[in-house]
Length: 364
Image (cartoon, rainbow, N blue to C red; front, side, top):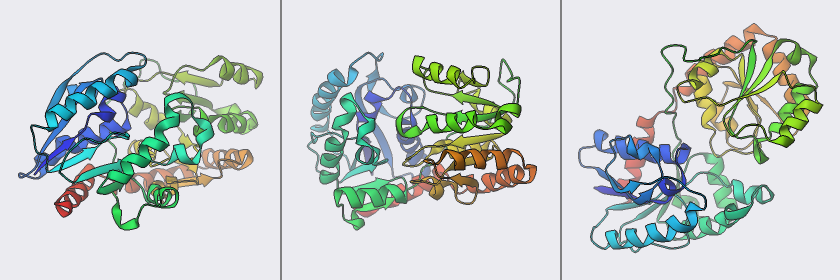
């Protein structure tokens, strides 16, 4: 059985959760099953994971550039059409959403990661506005769909009226590696609450800022450390300064090697997002022994289970109370840490690979 993964996500992401997911699948499947081969068909791509993996790849990596999707999409489509006319995949797995369909006789599999563009259309601009249309087209032509959480499956059925029997839920896992030693070049001066990821739109960072600004308990004993995304915008810096938090709220650009140490040394990890298709940072925090406080929305309770303290992300006072109660209780912190270790063990790439292989075999 030879599975081909298409170019789409690898031409869009230099690094990122979705491309990491497919590299994990493509690299692990042949090692787990002797009758399986995998190939990524990515004629021109910008993805770093492919370059440093054992994945059989048809294509080459090029530097990223502004507006790359306008140029790479038609070039990759044409080159892939030519290559597919000379090979015969057993399974063709599309890695993202497109309106155009490659001509293949093999069963098509599509992974849908979330329905955030459909649920929060006001949060998106530019090329992202076309994603619902592209997704609907890709869903319609797929023989089977994988969703990474039950919540995404429910939303897919509700919004696009996809038959339930056409969807299989296969959760992701974390590729996070716990650092064997402290990799920080500069240690934070005070205990800190950790926030990881982008901050705009549904990530709901502004509500977290409000909660922190209105809490004497949090400000007196903790900094708020923000990791990932770009530096604070002028608007964010103005807001932080207006709230009197310039010395309390800090942004750090951390490498992959630094992040495990930042998780493990944080008092807790907070995730105030309004919507997530999965929520990999939850598993990263748990693996590093960092207690989790997160939103009670979308897929987050499904992933975190009993290993997190929850709050309504639309309620600033509830978020503030959850943070205060957690940091002031050593018992709660320890309990969340232990529950997190156990919960994270339920998600593994071995399980993801096994379930995906079963799906492929059933389609054949």
